[in-house]
Amino acid sequence: MEDKIIHVVTAHRTTKSQHSYVVGVYESVDAADQAAFIETNNRGGKYSMRATPYIVNKQPDDLIDIERD
Image (cartoon, rainbow, N blue to C red; front, side, top):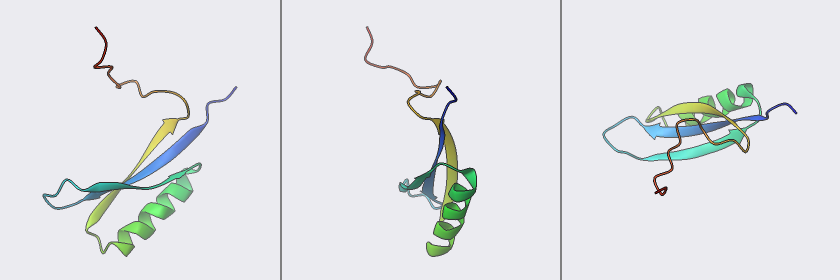
């Protein structure tokens, strides 16, 4: 079975603020890029966009379980 990849687009405030939010989740990188471009324009350039690919139902390799003994 082939891994299904999704692309999560997040917006990050370009000032000293820590504000960020999810713009959307997309199956294709082209759709993610288009959403990022549109949201950048809608927000007047105050947010930078990041599209991060993830494999569905697979935890990121750098995820750390802080609850283990």
